[in-house]
Length: 296
Image (cartoon, rainbow, N blue to C red; front, side, top):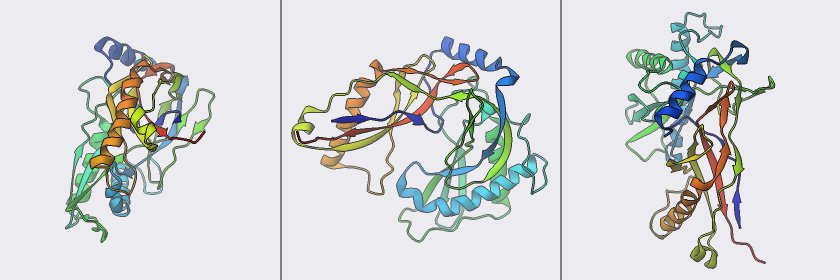
């Protein structure tokens, strides 16, 4: 039996829509009416893309709090007041991530994630990224360092800083972001959003040899659903959230077989694309696929 759950929103990533489709999306986003916007708090959140780096998160949260305070100061607010991010920051600037690398001595460096924006015109820089990198620089220059976790076995650890926020619905409700910690950084006007939904599920066949051998498995895949309602197979990658080591050898081959099965089926799937203020937009989603052999 194969169990396929609905896709959920993931962190921003790379879309592969052609130039004309991207230009049409950008034009639509530029014309969203004021009435489609709601002001919401924006948070600074540290995450890890590899569970082996999870031991860094307590120190990462401390740094995130320091960075948030620097950002709020740059936006000209008292410590107890949440500043408005606009006009310095646009909601389309929020799909940005900063990758922070921490070394054993507690020193850290940072870089902008390689993932490209799906909401800004190609080549347009993110003012939110500039705010975060300036704040990181200020924290570093002030002597901020991260405590090295005793459980760490690597020589360096990585985490990401992103800017999640609640999403207004078309009906005016707010879908709150589930956050591990709450570090508000500013408020911003954002348009109503609707999620990706499946209209024609991918027809995924259980790998015959694995089914006959009674091999079960669960994989979590991340991919972009473009504004035309099609999945982008080139954006597909797996998410390994288990504390267990990444699968290698024979176990790794089974894992790759499950991934390959889904990847081959995805191009035939169809979706209702995400919308922002009435504009179809590409969206990065995560979706679990459960392969399970059941008796009878």
